[in-house]
Image (cartoon, rainbow, N blue to C red; front, side, top):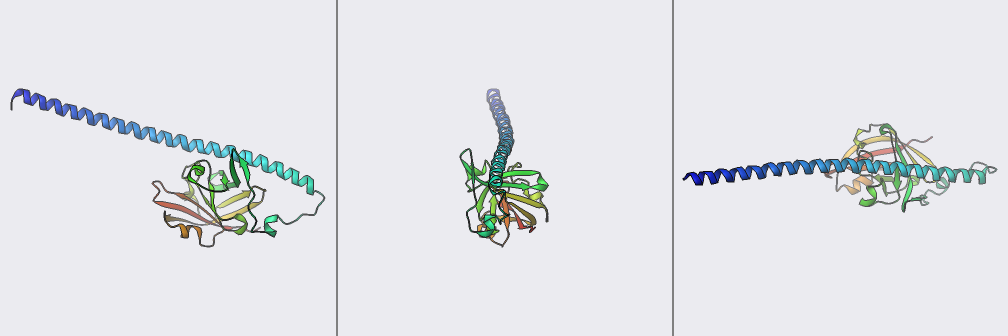
Length: 219
């Protein structure tokens, strides 16, 4: 092999090394950018949820004051949902989305709005009702695995308390019974079992679902 051939081979190897180095740098930069975007998206979702909760509380308080002024002379009555548990849950609209209430996960210091119905776009804004009703004790709520939403459900423990307050101001208290991990396709298992409240979210990668089962605490 001539000296020119050896020089050409060295130049090719050097060129390949440079390409590999730059490819590695680009991969690291892309990963950093993706991580940064995920953090931003999580924080943005948390801020949105806080704003919606604040609006829902204001509207709920205004409705309660109006109702109190109309019924101050009327003896205390049972809530409508007790007399008719099959009734539709009332909703409050905020920014074009319909919400059935707020969810307070006390051990995680989280308070989140809950949308009336779910799809993937809505779940990026707030947890959503998957199926069921708080009035029929079969409410199932799904949420994105943002840390500011349902990403920390796996930290809950048995007997931890969760509150759901509907759009009319009725408060439902629950205690955690179990925390399970179900396969992503276990839809029937997710929505059955006789629990009063179920919360679930996907694990990272979406291969399974963290599922929290709760029963009501009756006053």
